[in-house]
Length: 116
Image (tube, rainbow, N blue to C red; front, side):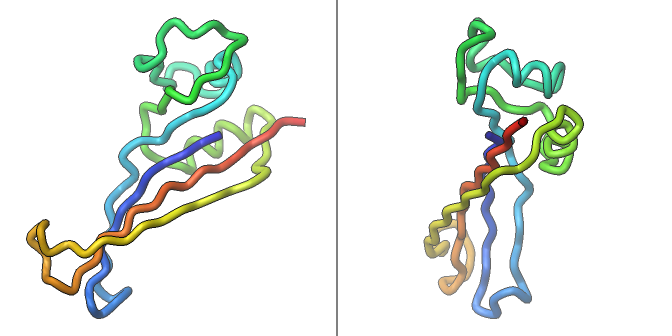
């Protein structure tokens, strides 16, 4: 499973002045040996460094910030996307220095991959 958090601001004029932020971190959840096989040196294991290969973890993340790169690596390793899920929340943003009508949206998206 690949996951990421994103955020963006939309003002009163909706899409015309949307300000998107880049993906901060792509997380990896799955069996340790499989994550290492697919992502190799681009897998950051610092949050769960001594995880046995046969165990699962949700604490790894990737050293790059491009979802397409993660999808390419999974495809090359024989995986296909099986499901996707996303949630979002909204808050007004005047305390962050924006106009009173601006809203900050945050989302969390997960992509589930499987290999036959």
